[in-house]
Each structure stands twice: as C-alpha cells, then as structure tokens.
Image (cartoon, rainbow, N blue to C red):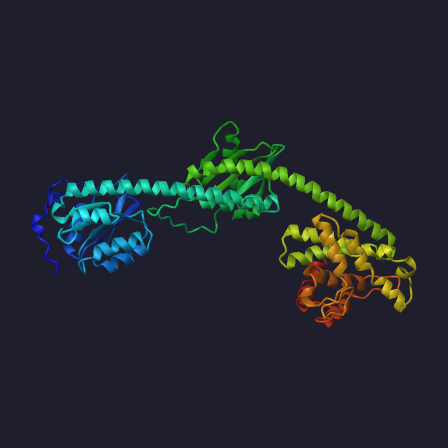
Length: 521
C-alpha cells in the first residue's frame, strides 16, 4: 500500500521569495502533473506560478491515475513536460504510462520527470536503465530552486527536440510542395497552387494557438509584371474578383502597391506590410512577379518560406519555358486541325459554319460536365475533325438532294472509319482525340449505330456528347436534302431519342442548359 507522503520534508521556500506580478504570455508550454496526491498538484503549481522559459508561460494539466494520464496524453500530444508519480492506483502506474507514451503513442518529444516518494518501488538505477525517462527526482527534494532547475533543463531539451522535428517536417513540406509544382495545366492554375502551398509553411507549433475569425475573407494573389505593368493573374479568397486587373488600378491595394514599388530598389525577397507579406521574385524569364499573402505574419515560418522560394523561382522559370514549348506544340496542332477543318468546310458548302458551331458547343458542353478549361479547349479543337472522313465520299452521294439508296448509305457509313485512319497513327494528343471522335460520333446509345455497334458506356463520353450536338446542329440548319427545323423541334426529337440514340443523362443536361451551350461567338 502506498504510504502517506510526509509534506514536512518538502521545503516551501518559494513562499518566502519576493514575487512580483508578471505579464501573462499568450504562448504557453503544457506541463502535466500526474500524481494521486492533491497536495503535490497544489504545491507544484504554486512553486511554478511565475515560471517563464524564453518568454513563454506554463499551462498545467492535472491527472491522478495512470489511466487518466494516458488519456490526457492522447488528448494533448504537445505536452512539453510530464511530472510523473511512480505509484498511483497501483505500484507500476507511472512506469506503465512511460511504456504507453513511448510505445503505443509513439511520443518521443514529451520530457518525463519521474517523481517518487517511495524510491524502493522504483530504484533510480533500474528505472534510468530500463525506461525512456529524462530525469528522476525524490519528492522530498522538491524545493523551488530544484524544481526550477529541473524544469529549465527539461524545457531546453523539449525546445531543441521540437526545433529538430520542425526542421525535419519543414524539409518534408518543401520536398512535397516542390513535387506538386508542375501538376497544373495553365499558368493560372500553377500560380494559384503556389498560394495554396504557402499555407503549408505556417508554424506547426503546439504551444501557439491563433484564432482567425475571417479566414474565408482572407487570401492572396499573384501578379506578373510585363512591360512595367503588374497584372493580377491568380488569386484566392476575397482577391479572386481582382484577377485580370492592373494592380495599380485597385485602390484597396495601395499599401501593397507602394511596397512593391519600394522593393524595386531593395534586395529583400520578403517584404512585410501591416496586413501580411509580399514575396518578390525577379525571375530569369521576362516576367517579374510578386505574391501577396494577407494575414498574421506571426503564424508563418519564414525560414521555410525562404528555402521554398529557391525552388519556386526555379520552378516558375522552368514552367514558363516548358509552357512556351508546349504552347508551340499545341498551337501547331491547332493550326493543323483548323486547316483540315477549313478543307471540310470549303468542300461541303451546304454545311458552312457547322464545324465552328460544333466546336464551340462542345467547349460549352464540356465545361458544364466539369471538364477543365484546358480539357474543354482540346475537345473544342478535336471535334472540328469529326467529319474529316467525308473527304473520301463522292460528291454525287454527299450532295445528292434526294433520298440515298441502301448502297449509297453504306458508303456514307464508311466516313467514321476513314476519319479515324487519317489520324490514328499520330503521336499528337489532340489528333488522337480527333481520331476517336471521328470514329465514334455515329454510335448510338442502344447499340444500333455504326461503324462498330457500340452501346452505352462502351461509347466514349466525348463521342456521346458530340453525337447530341452533331444531330442538333444538323437539324437546325438547312442542308441540300432538307430544310432547317426549329430549336424546339430539334430538342423534342433529342428528348424522344433518350436511351435510344442518345445518353439519357447527357440529354437532360443538354436540354436544361441549351441557352448556355448555344452561347457561341
């Protein structure tokens, strides 16, 4: 049985010291006192009531059993120091807590000061050897000076371990963030990702708690300077409405503008303003750019941000270089496709404007279906080639004003395969998509289409989209063999063909959003 602790042996020398009131600090270290005697809790906290370490005060957590202590450590993994009694509800409570903390909870940071009033239950040499503790004290040694010395030593160790762990985690963040820099299709997406990634460099300090009531209203933006004009090209939060604007013309940003202009004569990479901070990047390419982040500067780890800036600057230079090369390739593909499209348009005069209308509607339809802008742009271009195979069909059939014979219709049905063969061997992504759209745009949802009789999801989503658009445009425009139908008549036909010719879900979306889909230049 645990004996009553003799408090007469504890020197309460802190009561005689001349204590002066001290200002409370916002940041505090968590100190857990695990002991089954109320008196130990009271005395320890009274001794340490004015304690500060490097400007930070203490926050006390009281537990009275081993089970309570383990639960409290689970809830407070950022506990800096644990003053732990060896004997609580049983003779091994304290040592069990050590095993759980270092083992199951995998907490190597919290400093453990083992305290005992019964050294026979846990001999010092045995405990120090067999358990991962950091100090061993008898409760009878608990003077204010000894407690101060013990806590100073424990907090120094905790601080040093925390800094090492922070640097390790910071390097992990930089590696992870740098790896994600190129996973974007446009400069706007790339720069927006930079704003988001910078949030990774907020201090991850367990002793620091910041409450931000207006987090949704804050944000940041990126400007790119070209020809001495700085334009906001990416933004988050409340700054999204400024995208595309000259920063000099946004009156609300005067403080930031003034600092940016001042920075032209400064070597500083990070400029602080009252409302946040500015990152300056004088890139090797032709663009200077600035990142502005609004918020409390105290929450950011600027050592990590400085390290990140090196990668960011190189990444932006490489991104713009690669993007320039990729844009050249994409523009080349566009020129090829537009040229082919004009060939189709010029050959079939009765379908004048059909290719352009199809491409614009595909773009709008794709955005409605949550394709990205870059994906929608590719579909816009690729869809221009859907009828390229008709160049192999004799004019006598294509331009026949009357009804086609069965033999003539069989010839018409070869144009998807011809179109596919024109592009199938291309290594250009856009032309590969063109090939598949050409091949599949006459397939029907119920399997009755051609050339391969595909049905439902066997047909590419993009081809199912094009099928609706192609029929709608063909019906609402005059052809050599028919007059134009009204929009309402064409929509009625498409509605009646749900589940037969067309994908039912796509039909509903198309009809519900017809005005937006038809919003073309």
